[in-house]
Length: 166
Length: 358
Image 1 (cartoon, rainbow over the protein chains, first blue to last red):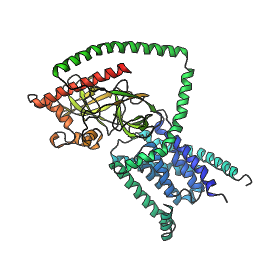
Image 2 (cartoon, one colour):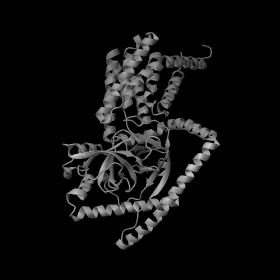
Image 3 (tube, one colour):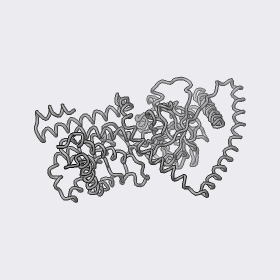
Image 4 (spheres, chains in turn orange, yellow):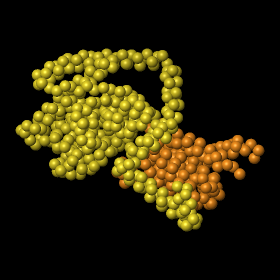
């Protein structure tokens, strides 16, 4: 049995890296295509571990992201809580989907999140985003299988390092 | 939070508990957003919580800066020489302009003595550099690398070599966030340099365009007119160039002409900016100072611009209209306009002095 700390370390590290990636500067043309890294990483850990990525954890991560991007406090938190709710609800099914089907579900989750964000933005009276805004979930879907493999590998390595005998 | 979960979990089971928790967090998020939007408590908490995420900005900033340093190291001598020559040319041209400024400054001082005018306002600059991070893509904001440790204050005007960039909105320890004039929630009191006509320039969420929706139909506005800050609203000192008029639309059946203007500052590609440190002549009430960013400005300004008397915000537009069209005979608006011109002159003068000093 792994200790709590051993299980948390890779999750926190990968989330921090995802946060860095979500504000790293990109050329203006590519910028709207930036995948929602934090959400993808959260979905992965929610699928692969039990009882760590709770709704409360998703809420806190979302608040961190709100502070980081300077958006309305609670905007990302709301989106991520809804997303993790859906993932937890359908976790049993999602886990055993073949990769392409899993990627499609990720697309649905990301699009759903964008709808929530657009709703908040329109309530606030800001200008609505361009059409390219809806391409980001597609990029997220394309990235998903590779990110899954990468995180799975990373998880294996960190587990091995914590328990060399296992 | 975990204890709350456990309590809820004991009462419900499985799906129901999950849904209940979802509702709880959704409600919490909505309350937070509403409070943040209304500016209640949350912004102050935010100022402290921002320290938590500051290290991440450093992590992002460092490799970008290192890359840029390496890049400039490997730039060919030829391109450096070309750049050097360009800069020398630019310097020469600007020195020629400065000579003229000196003469103007002398003249201004003389005239001021004649008028027994008040002391002039000196304006100091503080250099700042943009930080390469992409913030929330829905509001037009940028980060600069000066914060509370360098005495940056909320509301300071930010300009670059060509024109007005925006104003400081949040100040952290080492960073500040600047709202650009192109942000859809930003309104900037301006005046047309050629005629003195005053109006308000609104951002459109597009770095290449500003909108001037409430110009009088008969106003003398042309393509190519320069817009400068009018100094009203007490946020931006007067006389700084803002934008150039691109199109004027005098559509039939509308009360006002609408003009579009192109900002002069490099809003989407600039790297270096200047923070203006202005000595406030007298502390103004908070509401007046905050007017430039109030969202209600936009709504009331465009929706029912006729009844300006009752509007708290459009004293700017009212003055401009009054001075230009309605009652040119009355003393008050004209005197005010003259005052305004003096002020902006003083600002220019101060600017010239500051430039000479630096």
